Picture 1 (cartoon, rainbow, N blue to C red):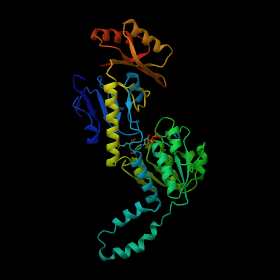
Picture 2: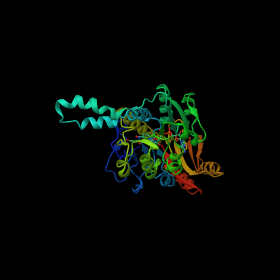
Picture 3: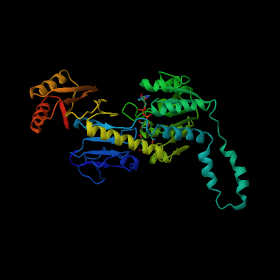
Picture 4: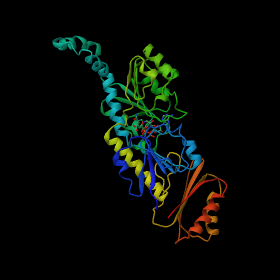
Length: 394
Ligand SMILES: NC(=O)c1ccc[n+]([C@@H]2O[C@H](COP(=O)([O-])OP(=O)(O)OC[C@H]3O[C@@H](n4cnc5c(N)ncnc54)[C@H](O)[C@@H]3O)[C@@H](O)[C@H]2O)c1
Ligand SMILES: O=C(O)CC[C@@H](O)C(=O)O
């Protein structure tokens, strides 16, 4: 790379991650024309994407803050960091499960009200504690919706704590299925989970199919006094419906990492200020993984952990490389390779991978190639119907 590649952070990103960018990169929060953006929960939906933008790295799991369709149309890969913050979230879920069940949040808040009561405090504590008698989680049943990086860890650890666990995830990956304890009872109909559990922890992405997944229809199927833990996204729970369920006692407690104006005023709601991934370790892991993914893409065109591009990689051995992001339609590869041979270039290695409606091709070429030959090839590739973006890496 001859000039510095500009990386624009949109949130506070751990220094450990930013320090991985070499001297070929410039980190500039104020850049108006960055090559890449690195972010956490910043809402990019209202932002105009800079024309210079080539890649986005999400230091975290959820990507509902990024306009994925727009990025795909423009040929911009969006990377995330699967699993990098899963342990942090799992620890907070387990903490909240026990702490809410033992009425600790309420008890701790009440204890603060005794400030100024002087020598009476010990006596008042002993008298007042009966308001906060809780329930042990051992022997109770936890329902886990979404058995990915976080959900599978929560399910496995809850078993270790003596709970029975029911899991629901129709799209569980093979990897996660291997990691999930066989003692987790998997159901294929979410209603079976709703009707049996004492606690529910939800760990699915917020996408149109999961918006409002926990709503009146779901609460009506649950036992009374069920506890709901939401460390995924606010939009997964219908606020108006849970407010009613909390009033009526179907839901005994709602523990949310995503408070809003409505939930803050709801009865029996524990509001946590989006702390799921806020541990030093998790912030470092996510930032480092996002930085590595961005650098690999910018320097070699290889794609690892993108949510809108297929995973695709060729070992980078210094050959001049051309990448193409295009529609996933028949004859695309033959059209691309015939353009390469028409400009008398020789292919050393290539790969083509698809994801949904798009595909990504990486071609390594032989020899030293004149700038004008590259120019001619790119022009031809861009003329192919269905081509979105091309890049030359040398
Ligand atoms: N509170 C936080 O700080 C924090 C941190 C990390 C992630 N999150 C949220 O947690 C979510 C899960 O994170 P993860 O790392 O476990 O992601 P993941 O991709 O590893 O797991 C998500 C799981 O949900 C499953 N799923 C998708 N749609 C489903 C549906 N309709 N019903 C049941 N299961 C479904 C998928 O098959 C997958 O196994 C993220 O999307 C993000 O919104 C929050
Ligand atoms: O970056 C954060 O602080 C939260 C990230 C979390 O919500 C995620 O989806 O990974």
